[in-house]
Image (cartoon, rainbow, N blue to C red; front, side):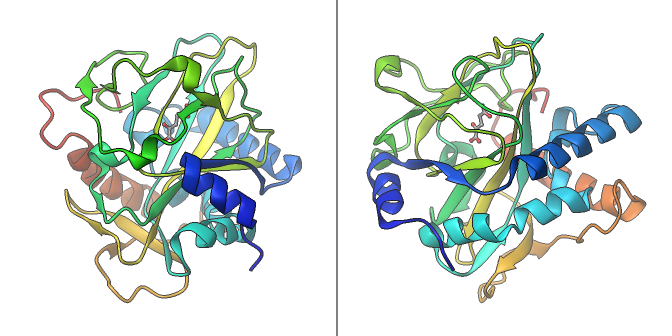
Length: 275
Ligand SMILES: O=C(O)CCC(=O)C(=O)O
């Protein structure tokens, strides 16, 4: 296992995120972009709304990325050797759209306890300040969970527009990645992202998240896959491993997982959003 360097781990512990880490080649990133664009063309809507979640359950290509050795080595450096994949989300911002992500903490609504988990953001295209990369508030993971308003907004890529107000923008740091690089962030770090002002799409494939096998889902049910090590706790149901792109079994398994995820995301919400 190669994993993160001592400096990377120190950076993660101090700031709540670490980037950029090399993971995929630019050719591999392009293959994933091609997979996305193939699905979009052949099955319109198959990656939209709630269907932007759990794409690794309908595509062997995405599933393979989640099991990438370099990514798992980096994850192991943070959460230890028993690693489960509990979800994935595609964050796509097209150049002609106004999509943004309000400042939030992932741990607020996701129900994963304890916080022995890490989110890996995989850049399928480059991600920079012009096209709306993630902005992190360094050190914010050391504070408690903040109050989040629920600002439902059709351009907000978060389910219920969960928003922390008055984030000091001058203190935030951009997560600039080349296609194929990754960032890792802590469950409690305050982060968000602006709109894409470039003339190409900005695509992030996000494993939300890699969890230690000791992590339970306290708000509902999640379908997991063992990525490395052992699951001594057996808190979760296991997902069907895809062998065919958009096969019948694959779609059934993704739909079932999304139904449960929706219950978690909207637990206690007054309204249901687009995702
Ligand atoms: O892709 C983005 O801009 C935001 C993603 C995000 O909030 C996350 O991965 O936790």
